[in-house]
Image (cartoon, rainbow, N blue to C red; front, top):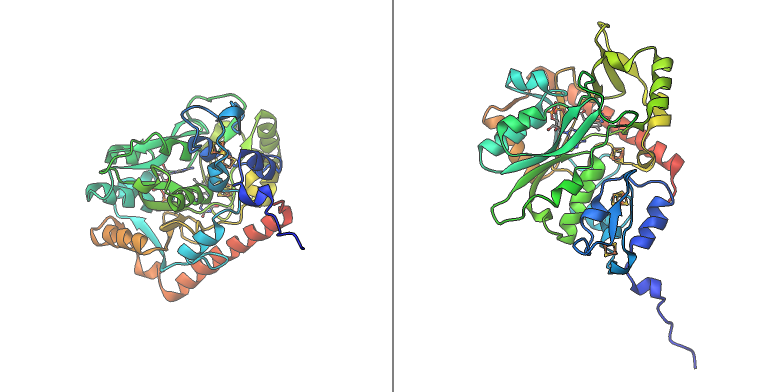
Length: 376
Ligand SMILES: Cc1cc2nc3c(=O)[nH]c(=O)nc-3n(C[C@H](O)[C@H](O)[C@H](O)COP(=O)(O)OP(=O)(O)OC[C@H]3O[C@@H](n4cnc5c(N)ncnc54)[C@H](O)[C@@H]3O)c2cc1C
Ligand code: SF4
Ligand code: SF4
Ligand code: SF4
C-alpha cells in the first residue's frame, strides 16, 4: 500500500522571523524600514527590535509567536505579490495609471520651498482643508542631511516639511552618518488609531509597498491610511565620512557648499558658489547606494494612489501619475479647488508621451539593475 504524501512542516508553518533573516538579512537587502519590528504580533512583550545600525534582530526569541507577520509585511519578500499585483492591476514596467501630467502648486509660496512643483504639498493641504484627513505622515528635515518621520496635523506643519532636498546649512548631526532614507513606516504604529482618524502617507516605493501589505493583511492601524502619495525613487544613499571625502574629491566640491539637492534623472547638487548645478550620474554613486536599493525594481511607485517625481518635467514642475480612483478623486479636488495647476502647453499629447517615455525608460533601467543583482 502506498503511503499518503505527508506535508512537510515548512509547507504548514508560515514563514517566520528566522526566514526573514535568511531571505533578507543574510542576502544584505534589508531596507531598514522598521516594518517587521513595528508590526510584530509580539511587539508588546518584545520579540524583535532594531539594532543600532538600523537592522532588526531577536531581542527575545522565546517571545516569538512564529506567526509570520514580519515575513509577510517585509517589502523585500515576495509574499502577497500576486494579491497586490491583481488589486492594483500591475502591468510592467510602470503599473497602471489614469493620467500623467506636469503640474505645479498654484501658491508661489509652496513652489518656493518645494522640491519640484510642490504638488505633493498642495494636495496634502487640499486634503486637510477639506477635512479628508486629520494629518499626513511625511518627513521633515531637522539638520544637515538628517530627516525624521513627521506626522503633520496642520497646514503650517505640512509646509514646514515641504521639499525633499538636504540642505547642509544647519549643524552637522551625527558625524559620519549620512542617510537619505527616512524610516517613516515605524512611525505609523504610534499614530493613535480611532474611528475618526484618517491620514495620508507620503513615501518612496518600498514604504508604500509596506503600507499596501499592511492594508492587505488588515493590520491596525493600516486602515486609517486613506491616501497614499508615492514618490518616484531610483535609489537612496547611505555613507560615512570616508565615502564623503571620496565623493568630494571625485566631483570637486565640498559638502559645506551644498545649498540644495534634488533627485530626478540624476543627482542634482546646487552649490552656493556655482551658478549651474552639478549633475552626478546614478551610476557614479554605486558605492554609496543603500544595499536594499540594488534589488529594488519599483521606480514609479506603482502601488500608490498617485505617484510624483521630477523626472521629465521642467524645473519647478512635478510629474504626476494619477493611478487609482481614489487618487483621481483627490487630484481632481485639488485641481478644481485651485490648489494645483496644469499648464496646457506642458501637457500636449506630445509632451505627455515624452513624460511617459522617460518614466518607462527609468523603470526599465532600474529593473535591469536589479536583475543584475538578483539574489532571492
Ligand atoms: C528619497 C527620494 C528619492 C527620490 N528619487 C527620485 C528620482 O529618482 N527621480 C524623480 O524624478 N523623483 C524622485 N523623488 C521625488 C522628487 O524628489 C519629489 O519628491 C517629487 O517630485 C515631488 O515633488 P513636489 O515638489 O511635488 O513635492 P513637495 O511638495 O516638496 O513635497 C514632498 C513631500 O515629501 C515628503 N518626503 C520627503 N522625503 C520623504 C521620505 N523619505 N519619506 C516620506 N516623505 C517624504 C516631504 O515631507 C513633503 O511632504 C525622490 C524623492 C525622495 C524623497
Ligand atoms: S511574533 Fe510573528 S511578527 Fe513577531 S518576530 Fe515572531 S514571527 Fe515575526
Ligand atoms: S526591510 Fe523592513 S520589514 Fe524587511 S527586514 Fe528590513 S526592517 Fe524588517
Ligand atoms: S530604491 Fe527601492 S528600496 Fe531603495 S529607497 Fe527607493 S524604493 Fe526603497
